[in-house]
Length: 403
Image (cartoon, rainbow, N blue to C red; front, side, top):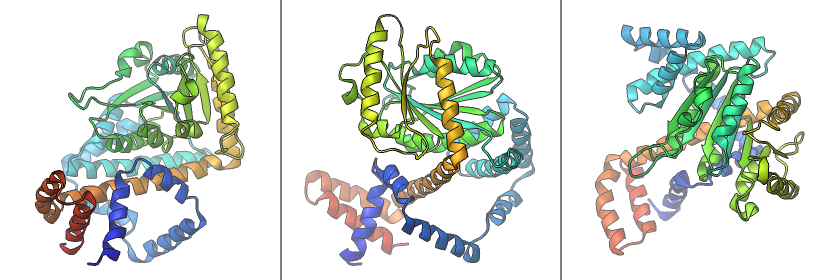
């Protein structure tokens, strides 16, 4: 295989681990050429590939009686609103066991069919609203979620909180431990809190979080809050699975506009200045004005919504009801314009290709020929005998020629 064939493959595999791959993919899906490719792919899929129903029936036909009873119990409990069934279902989709992953997909297909029926009865509109929450450590995310969660359950809503919790690389322990800090909301029977420690793998937890959203909606939770700490790539992942992305910032953090990455601000549909009470009211007002000015310089994400900056206090509750009214205005504007549906469809495509990339990289790493050559090439790279680029070319050549 010549260099002209090796290098394109190299670029594709290298893109799998790129932090900006998700953003590039999101932008590329909006290009007309890619839309035409998707149309052609759909036509090809109809004529050459096995249908979803056939693939699903293949999985179902191979189920044992015990597995069928398990899936029936989980599905019936889930749509019946049983918290235990929801917890067990999320555990099932989080597993890495090959057989259990197949069971999880069968369960997800049944829940998706149930949700589609609900949406049809709801006039084609989503039955749940997904809100992503992010911000630097100390921004008061847990306190805010508890206050707004209690307010929403008091109004008759069912609220689920999915916390994407980065883990220690040393011990694997969670860094945030949000559930222990939401004492009142965790005891509320109309709320469900599910921490998701990453165990060092960001892509894995965000994949399962995306599927956990589907399960929560199937269980009847009409408000889904997805929280992540402001550590970088997780914000891009969470923004691609929610209807609205909310950025929470504290009122006193030094050079505030430098403390938050521009890319994260660009994703925000709403910026919330927290802890606006007592001596922090004046700094909160100043930061609100600074972010309001900064947002005017950024490119608009939506044709019908202009990002806003609001102040709230989780301690006193001031501004929280008005904040929820702003969120509802966003939802109504996005629904009436059709942008919400388009956003969800684009997100599904993004996650499709994220999963393809993740599985393709895993297949490359587990390939027997690559596995056999890798130790020696790693040794030569670390000794400086060959460049990392040449080693990657050689591994890709082995991967593409030995099947």
